[in-house]
Image (tube, rainbow, N blue to C red):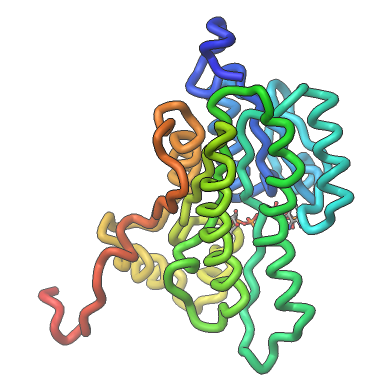
Length: 270
Ligand code: NDP
C-alpha cells in the first residue's frame, strides 16, 4: 500500500506495512525507528519482546512485536498468519535477524555451522516464502536483506558467518529475478563495522579501548565507524519507490572500508 493509495499518509513510508526481523535491538531497532518516524506501521518479528531487551524502545504508536523464530517454519507461518489478520498484507520485508559465530574450522561442529545457516540464510528464505503471498496486490513491494561486507570479504574465524552472508547476497539476486515479474523488488544492504552490541563486545574486551576505537575509525575513509541509523537510511531508500528500478543489488554501507586498498604502514604517507 503506497502513499499514492493513501494520499493522507505522511512521511517517506506513510501507510506502508513493514516487517523487520530481529528488530528488538541493534541495526534492526534503528530500521524500526526510521520506518516508524517515516509513517509506516512496523511489525517487529523477534525471539524476545523488545520491551524486555531494549530499554527505552517506545512500543506505543505504529509498531508492535510478534514473537518469531526465523529458523522455524511453523513459527514463520504463525507469524505470517498474525500479520495477515492484523494488517491484511505486507509492503516491505526487512530480513535483518542474524547471528555471528567465531570459531576455528577444527572447533566448528556441524550443529554450529547449521545454526548459523539456519538463522542467517534459512531465515530470509522462509520469511520470503511465507510473506511474499501477503504482498499480493500491493504496489511498490520490496524485500531488503541485511547481508554483510563479510559476504564479499572475510574476517578470520568466520567461515560459517561469511558463507551465510555470501548466501544472503545470492538469495537476494535469485529473489530479484523470480519476483520481479510479480512486482516485488529484492535488494541487500551489506553493512561494514556498525556500532551495535554485536561489535561493541570486541572493543570492550580490548585492554586499550580508546586506542581500539581510534584504530577502527582509521580503517574507514570517512574517518568513523558506522551507526545503525546509516544502515536504516539505506534500507528505507531501497524499500521506497525512489529505488523503483533497483533490484538484485547489494549496496555496501561501510564508510568506504572495502574500497580502500591496503598498503603497508611503512609505505603509507602518514
Ligand atoms: P544484534 O545481535 O544486535 O541483533 C540481532 C537481533 O536478531 C536480536 O534482536 C536477536 O534476538 C534477533 N535474532 C537472533 N536470532 C533470531 C531468530 N532465530 N529469530 C528471530 N530473531 C532473531 O545484531 P546487529 O544489529 O549487529 O546485526 C543485525 C544484522 O546486521 C545481522 O544480520 C548481522 O549479521 C548484520 N550485520 C551487522 C554488522 C554490525 O557491524 N553490527 C555488520 C554487517 C552485518 P535476541 O537478542 O533475542 O537473540
